[in-house]
Structure formats: C-alpha cells, structure tokens
Image 1 (cartoon, rainbow, N blue to C red):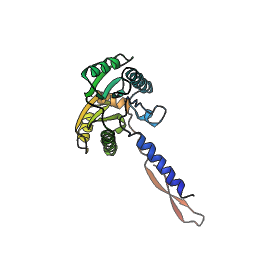
Image 2: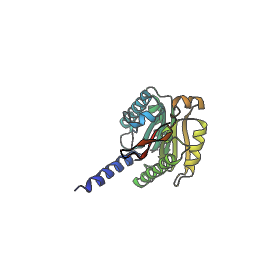
Image 3: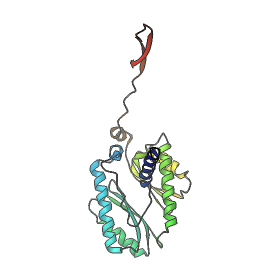
Image 4: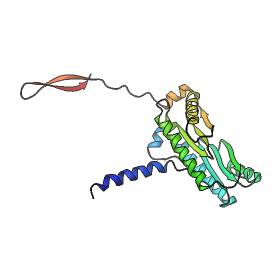
Length: 230
C-alpha cells in the first residue's frame, strides 16, 4: 500500500498540470488562476486578472443566452483585450456575437476570429489541445523567454499569443511558436510594453551569495571544512 501513495501523488500532480492545458470547449471561460502561484508571476495586476475572469464569464453567459448550444465560441480576455474564437453557422451570427461581446463592461478591444463553419469535431479540439501543450512546453524550455508572460490559445491549428510583453519578447516567442509541430499560423494579440516598463514589472533577481570554506576543529583536533557566506 505504501508504494501506491507516491504513484497516486504523481498521477494527481500530472492531472493538475494537464488540466491547465485543456483546449477549447463551447463557450469556454478560461481565466487566470487567481489566489495561486500564477498571480505572483502574471504581469497583470490581481485586479486586472479578476476583471478578465469577469469579462469572460459575462461574455460567455450572454452568448449562451442568445445562441444556446448551437455554436462553438471561446472567449479569452487578457488585460481587457478580448479574443473571440470558434465557429458559427452564418456571417450574421458572427456579427451578432461580436456585438454582444463588445457591449460587455470594461472591455478595451475585441478581436473577432470566429469562422463561419460547422462546429469543430472532438478530434479537432483534441488536436488543438495537443498543439497548445507543445507550445507551452516549448516556451517553458526556452531560457530566453519568460513563459508566464504569455497566454496561449489554439483554434483549428492557429495559435494566438496573448500577453503584456516587449517587442523583443514577442518576436522571440513568435519565432519559437512557428517552429512547433502542428502550428499552422501564429496571431499576436499582445499589449506591447517598453524594456523600462518590463524592468519595473520584473525586478532583477538578488545576487547569489558566494560561499567560502572555513576550517572548523573537530573533537579530535582535526580541521573540518565548513561553508559560510563570503
């Protein structure tokens, strides 16, 4: 029984990690993990993160009231910039969806990326989920990119990059994402900030304390090396 506990913990950890990579669902509301680790590393204020969650919730609710379950629409908001993706049956539905979202309180802008198509299949959405996972993994593994500064959304092979980043960071991320298997197109939905603003948002890490060895006498009178701050 003792041997099964580590396996259970590992499975639980894996499921929690993968839950953050789950792709689009009809009228998905995907907000920030407020109250957890992501708040500390997110470049939005905690108030902005809560506002983005509220925007996503309100927009999804209003779209559901109008369309019910006959459409597949995803809402993602980052610092009040709203991305609308998915599929609707007609051009009129696309225009109506944009009008509904644009009337939600406190929105700065809306990017309507809805396609006039039949709803995507489970297989297509699973493929998008896999692409999102690959992109996030690539961002995490790249030492030049601060992965938590980006929010990734994938729809029909198109990867949308959201976040508050410098032009340098945006270019690095765009080039990296383009090289990921399964990515057909990259669209940037970002808020550009200056390098000076980035320095204010992300303070320089404290310098590491160098250790030097100092002799400590043992009970037998023999010197024993011990580390201490230099």
